[in-house]
Image (cartoon, rainbow, N blue to C red):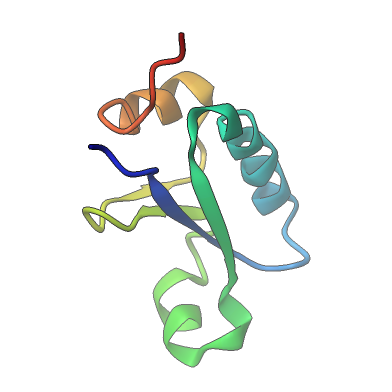
Length: 87
């Protein structure tokens, strides 16, 4: 039995690109995708790792990361093995 994919979107509150990425991810909510948004300003380690890369999407099952820019087809391809077929 496959579990719902868990993703973390790393970004900041004042990042318009992060808002775009979040809106794009919302389109996948019907596929059981769970997205947790993480503000990198809450951690010096996250700031060091992601400051110049945000938004960054991370798959929690594999640790794979997808840096912006990405579009819906690229995102679906990246998540292809996790997306739940409907109907």
